[in-house]
Length: 459
Image (cartoon, rainbow, N blue to C red; front, side, top):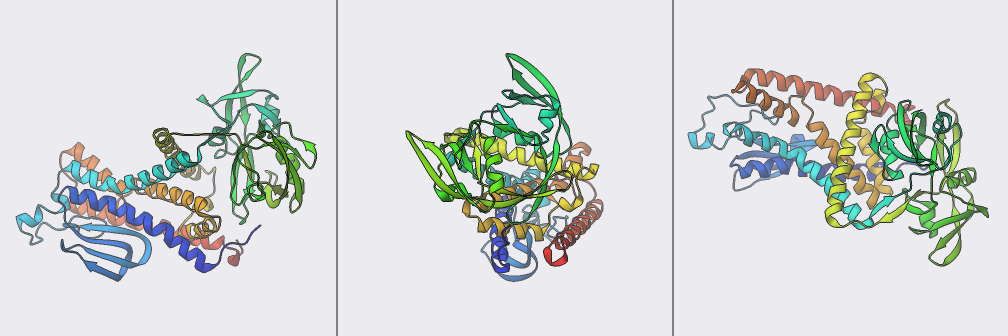
């Protein structure tokens, strides 16, 4: 396990993630507001006391505030940064009132509110699409070439050579898609459709629950199907991959580890895991050449469902072949990936409410800061990918129908559309106060939970 980065690196990385994402979110509100002729009184990155700022020629106060956990645009006519409407006897002239947010038609107000989360979503799509366009898409054969120890799939009746074609009725085109249907559902029984000898067979499989630990000691409970897939082609690398550092390249076919032949990708973990901290000879075929490459294997840990912790070697490669993606298709894949992430978030929240996951798995500012520093230490690709996940988190959270958040305002507008008139100002004000109190209480809870899980507090 590797120690986390220092405090200064963590703070810097946290601000480098959150600052631009908040700026982009609030710019979405601001620019669409300007498009519809709404005057902005203030644009703030952070909350609380102003640290620095200036006023532009339109009268907007641009400022950096003390608490860097968000931001806001306060439009003309807002009583406060959460966009509660001001009183009607505000002393504004008819011309000034025409520039207020609440004087605009319902559809314009809805678009202004929606613009913030949408900019975060668009940024996430752009990042994912960029990675697809530059690096391509990994495609791996979904044919079963082996089973892990105590494999739930093998116990359920899957066999070597079965090709997985669907999970819970959703088509599987590549082995890389299987994790979307398994990793987030430990203990769930899923329906796995396979082709075997020209027939399609549907097998119910109860996923194993594994607790995995990364190089920084962060733990995650995941569902595991317990199958290994072929062929043994290097389709990508994980984090600070020992294989990549040693000179193994994308597209290499792994033939042997320390002289032991590799028939399929499923053989690789079996041969690598016992060699934590050691250097092994990995034989690969690259084009017409056969090369022997020494690789220093790093150590990680894995915890099974009985709570047994095992130290294992990690080589940092994933299966599959690299498929080039044109820019238009990259955008489509980026959209698909973004909505998959949002679906995962919704699933996680639902599992917390049903008790399938612990509330300790919720993350607040402290955990985001911790992960920011860790991903920053892994390089720009890992850091930018993490920023994309936080961006879509901001979009998802802000779209929740909680008063005081963007989703709460959209809920007000939906009620206004049905009622043909807005909710009363007092009702909106109390709803917003309640929503803000709820959000603050949740922030306090997750922050205390994050702090309790830090090593300094015995977490």
